[in-house]
Image 1: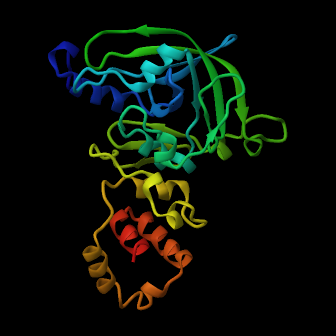
Image 2: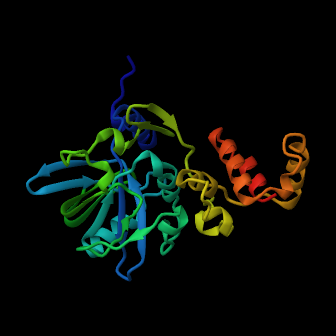
Image 3: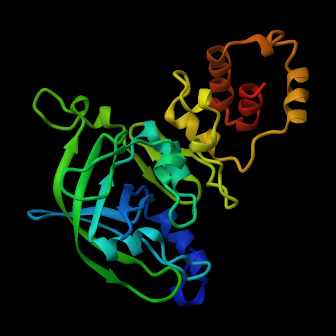
Length: 289
């Protein structure tokens, strides 16, 4: 058996071991607002529920291992003492992943991920309308666990308003876990889906994905492409060039001889098939053909 003393290995290595060993973990999709009213949205898997009376949730935005900087979420909860924690189900997992991209301060991750801002009733941060359970919270305390890269910050939150989508409740008013279809985080690029087991999502680009807000209108407003499809499409740093698109059209001309004359709806259906195999590049070339 391999054995390690934490101080004898790098923080990055230890972080990787812990994330893979303590898994799967629930995801807090945390919506905050800075002192100037700018919204922020980011997922955290150091998260759980710790009390029912009072109702307490705790999540931990850790200091970045690579450069020991803090995240916008932590800065916002310290400044405003409010947060909305939204749960993540399979229907929005790709958009959640895209929102974890480290965009600059002031960039609206709701717009980047193609998610809808829903006004809260008690706190100022917005809820994620697509999330089936949303919890408005007041921040009671932030406990800093260290000052070095990788150190956690326990954000202790009290739920002041709970919202549950009607379709997630059974005839007795209880949450139907099968309908909820929650997603949890594991190590590396692995996630776990209730009743389905592990699956992988490529990590968001460090070069910053274009986001849903920068997509052509017919794509981001598609009646065919799902939120997960848009999340995958948004995680590219640039759209394919005209030359790349022209070459793609030639390559698939036998299968799709009328590709240029297809309707948006027809193209979107075929693009979904490419996306089901993780082929984002071909999906974009088809959509832009």
